[in-house]
Image 1: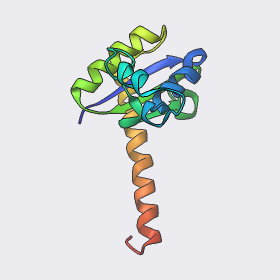
Image 2 (image 1 turned 180 degrees about the vertical axis):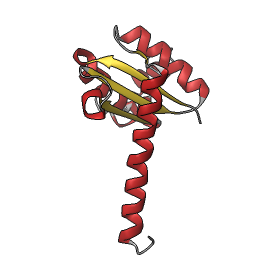
Image 3 (image 1 turned 30 degrees about the horizontal axis):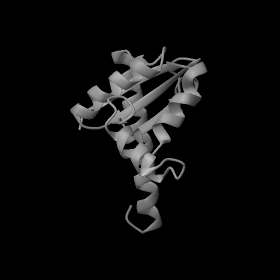
Length: 126
């Protein structure tokens, strides 16, 4: 699946994080009719929590202080829908530069590798 990385300003980071974590299927405050309407909405029907989405502080990653980076590993159709939703809902979310995207992908892969080697050590598979 293709990976894309987006960036956003710190002032929108919390709202973006809520969007990435939101799953209407587990939201007990909406009715079935509201849920179905949401799924048919061009923007609100883009459910990030069903994809591999991660958000990281640019300062902690050594990329850019004051920006947050969003890693999305999903199919091409979802990526296109996600980009439309970001541009519709947020002012500062945009595709990261190639350099920032490459660095974020490398950092995520390194994190995954650490986790996998740690799990292997727990179960005796080094």
